[in-house]
Image (cartoon, rainbow, N blue to C red; front, top):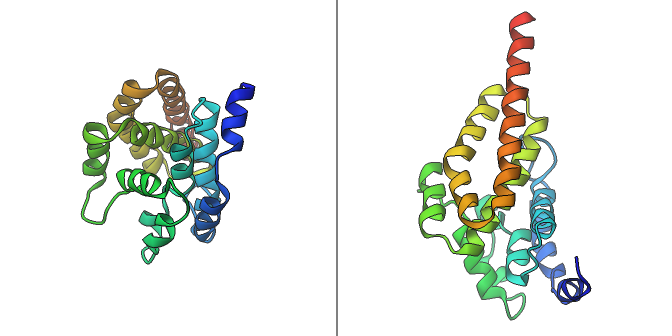
Length: 188
C-alpha cells in the first residue's frame, strides 16, 4: 500500500459501519465463526487486492446486515454519513431477497450489478470459500464450489483476474478436500 493509499484509507469513516455490523456477532456460519468476522474478512480481501474506495469498503463491512437481520432498521444505514445512500444502494445490490433463488440472485449480480457490486460479491465469495476449509459436509462444499464456478467465476473474469485466480485455486483445493473426505469415509 502506498502512502497516498494509506492516507485515503485513513480518512475512511468505518467505525459507525462496523458498529452496525456488530449486530451480526450472534449469527453463526456453517464454517464456524460469526457473520461479523466475515464482514471484516471481506473488507480485508478487498484491501488485499488494492480496493480502497470508501463506499466499497463501507458496504463490505455491512454487506449482510439486510439479508441476515430480518428486522434491521434500514434508516440506521442511511444516516451514518454523507456516503450512506451510496453504501446502502451497494448493499442492496448484493443482498439476496426472500423471493429470489440463489441462481436468480447471482445471475442478477452478474448481469445487472455495478462494477462495485461485482467486486464486492467476488471478495465475499473468496471469504466464503476460505471458510469452507472448516466445513465437513462434502455435499455442501461440492455444491458451493460448483456454484462458484458457474456464477462467480464469470463475475470475477469480468472485474478482476487476480481474484478469479484465487477463486480457481480455492475451488481446486476444496475439490481435493472433498475427494479426501470421501475416500476416508469410504475406507472408514
